[in-house]
Length: 141
Image 1 (tube, rainbow, N blue to C red):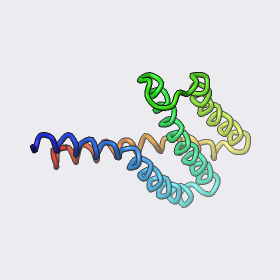
Image 2 (image 1 turned 90 degrees about the vertical axis):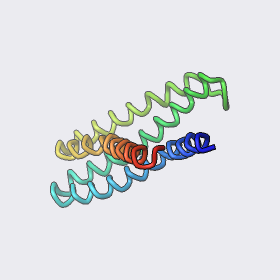
Image 3 (image 1 turned 90 degrees about the horizontal axis):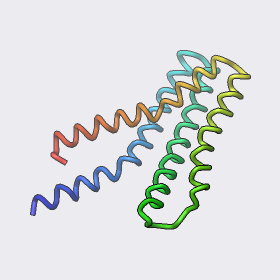
Image 4 (image 1 turned 180 degrees about the horizontal axis):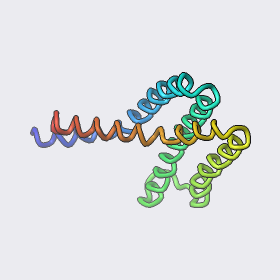
């Protein structure tokens, strides 16, 4: 009986990873944006906020693309065209490139903030991984 509850608890816990990562990104983005404004000024801080916004949007789009590819590979769910999935995948990179170019034209300093903000999902995923290891060791999930 106990053997059946642990996989179910683990499934419930790990299925919430995406929402936890998004929450962590909002918390880290807010904290680091405030620090960037104080330490480096408004230009770099604004670039960082734009980078964080793009990173969060990009992370959401990546989740949708991966879900669409998984649905397409398994044949479950609604069928989406392959061209649409590929277009959305490439659109993410075009958006980042266009914003980076526009910011580069305005100020090189804000480009540094933008590039730092784009690493927001990396920090959030790292914290989520540490949390998952902690829960796995502590609770055995």
